[in-house]
Length: 391
Image (cartoon, rainbow, N blue to C red):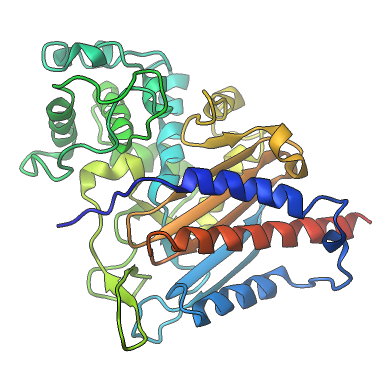
């Protein structure tokens, strides 16, 4: 089985996108004041998505604008599976990929809030049996270093499918030990994106609770927030079109370059990005970062998750206020892909807005730009509509 865990170019892409939006929606620009008013943002989003589908950019796409209490606009276009005529709907589940890392971070924040962990908890203090089994480079690695990708770890373990005979908690711990026996592959304290690091952070949560990450995130996140559509791995039932399939791009002389695919990453990778859910449920989660007044968790723990070292915090790339005055504050961004889906999210807390674009496909080197272009369109559409409403 081939796992599609490619080098992340989306960080630079999203930063450039935010800077582009900043320029293009500045109140001093003439295009900001176009006379044609978009009376139905969902219709406009659908039209833009439909154009991309007709151009062969994806088999299916979805995009949305949300606030802390509602989905303001949402539309989809295309099909759940290439070769079928079953529409991709606005109620369908999408695969979040690494956008789910912030969910793991919030889960860990609940354990910090209860005193079961601290941000500075050391890996070997939480799991003492590792002291004799891992390289000295990793003896003092902390939870916050893991969440901010500053541990010296490589991006992925040598084999996500190793130790498949073990139960998931023991499996993750065994994968951890296998991959921490050797010295750090990167400079400790410097940013190096690591899916492995998020699995290790989950191992710490599993150790202090005795429960798997899957059980913890259901009980501590999905159920309290009412995220009934949330699950793991493929959104669809195997071999059925009850939800969208992922797709990979293949060269074809016959006009259809999108090949339906059911090749999802192994269970051990879960904390780094195997969550799926629909947009309405994802909005419930994102609302935590749009509203300080929530009953889920004390806001100070969420503020920690958006306090970056450099530009990465607890599951978010955090762009500073000075770089995007249109947002009147920081912007939180992330993208995720398992090679057959691509999903991007942008959150502007001071504007009480989040913007989402997802496609059930991935062509490396192309899909990122398609989603970033669509994000730019819906942000500018929303900003224009908001300005017209306030005038």
